[in-house]
Amino acid sequence: MNIRIFFLGFITIMALGCYEEPFFKLNVSVVNQDLVPIENAEVIISVQDENGAIIDSANVYKSGFTDLNGNILFEFDNLGFFTVETKKMIENTKDSTLNYEICGSASVGLEENMTKEITILNHESNCN
Image (cartoon, rainbow, N blue to C red):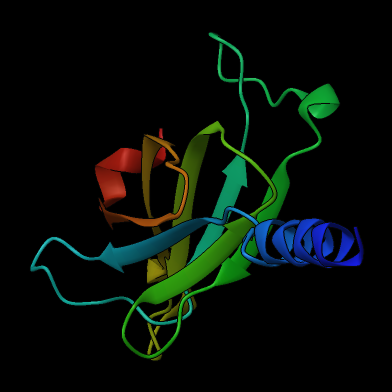
């Protein structure tokens, strides 16, 4: 009888000990029209309705800035279909009236236990 209890306990511990929480990650790369990575571009992740308005009740809103290689990694608690928006102000060091913004956007769905990768092209005409 003690052997059965030991064996049942051992099987239970092994079954529960092997479970790994699923992960949901999104790696965003931001590039310009020459496909050069853009450093310090702001990246915003949100859930939007069909008119492009952010759905606050979705409780998903993340933002950050790209690294030297134009990349940023986001982690989520579960699956989702998100809007990814990027923007970067390009400053003219000689004349601030010549500053301009470049933007980009895309939609992406996450997959369980996979780092989804997306590249977004930032361009002046994408800011409308």
